[in-house]
Length: 261
Figure (cartoon, helix red, strand yellow):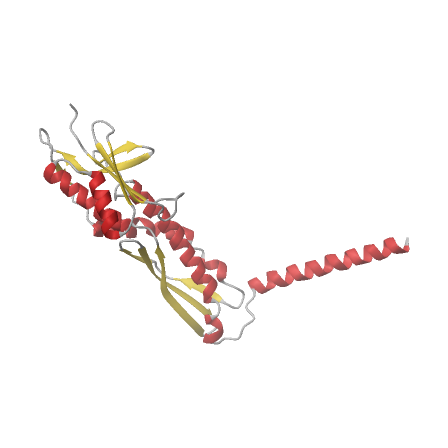
């Protein structure tokens, strides 16, 4: 009986210790214990920065993969795209009746950048939860979000101008610059798509194998350019082998409209 009583006491003490630790962690996460100095307030920024940049990366990847799958556009308007393989894939060159050539739609890289800036903003705002970093005795607030997108050959830089202010009483500090670089070859594949569309618009054809071999040799990047022909159109599918990896290869695909026989 005495041993059983000792075990019960130890169990109760153990529960109390665990409860105290949990209470301490909860209090520490909800009450600010630091002094009101800019140096101390600055120490609160790393988790906020990680949160903002995690949102930029998550939303950015989703939208960039989608814009590649849909041929450089996030929207699909009647007459400008074709449903295929579960995606609304845009035409980048329209059929000209009775001619092998097509009419170049004129997609520019700056159009892709502007589309990403416009469409990503609401999703990034929905992802952000800056209020979670406020504590008793510490105020954390944010201003309006502005996005800038810069598409390079092998990466996409997402720059967020987001004023985040941390204050305790009359002492405050602020940061507003957050960014991520996504290693996705959107610019490189857009340039190849541009070459293909120009050839189709001028000549009405494009030799994918020769192009793939030459681009691979010149750039030392393993280009894969496929031309499929779901009647009556041509579907071009472009990628760099195993980029960013073999499971999640980034693809840029688009249709060239052709005339039914």
